[in-house]
Length: 366
Image 1 (tube, rainbow, N blue to C red):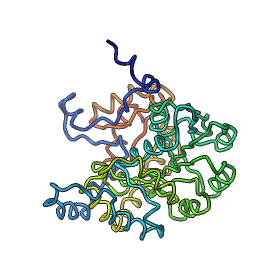
Image 2 (image 1 turned 90 degrees about the horizontal axis):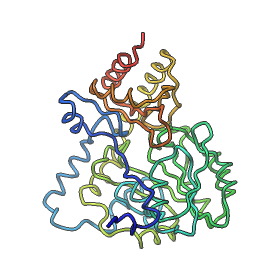
Image 3 (image 1 turned 180 degrees about the vertical axis):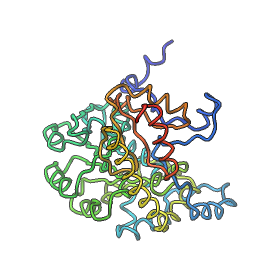
């Protein structure tokens, strides 16, 4: 019996999501230590102290189910961003939310639009529900919004936009998004995935909640895994109009956010100093990466995220493998259709210096 024959049609074409290699796995494989991981866009400053204290306060209550509605966390988000709690949907990371959007609004007779070189979860959730994927060719490695508009038809149900985009780091301005949303029919749901928004400069950051007030078919999705440092706890949130949030919460699994994640999220959302420190390091170290690439004539995609993607003009897998032997883990992205590129997360200054040294050795840079 081959069970693939009885699986849902969309699932048959899928491959498991390939995450960045864990440090422990590399230690087992090569028997080396002192490894740095710049592969998964994690927070280089580690788990914030505010979250540690929040977790300690919850340890005596872990035999109880978490608050299924996340009342206190929703209140914190609402106060911070001047929205209403009934506009908020909580997720087990933003990936959970992306899947939730697809299950709530699209089915096998519908079409879902997303960009080439966009977050790989968009095609994953689309194919899993057997909807038709409309992947729009990228424009300068980013979203071609005119191409999106041209692809809309009577079957279009959902549009995914990552801003900044992962894995390329491209960025759409408030003006560009506003003009695009004004042309999207009001019955089509547009998801603005802002997992990396905290790394954009405040002066250029999209006022997505202002757009939400203007366009009721918009959903804004955010993560607490990156700038806030809670990747291991899996927590994210979406903001939409109250009617959409009600529909999402009908499909959302009960207790999808655990007690430690809920408490930590409240703490870090109030920890502006920690997030400011993370963003400042990212800006400073991104300049070092750009200078390194320019010095050695390496092509890179300008990024507004906490990572940079470098084009080596030849298959990048051997470079990735050689870096592993130097104790440096980065991210190959051939699965995104970018076999000549590596995506490198921005780390602490000493980690980035180590990466530069390893690249010089592996590429024989003079």
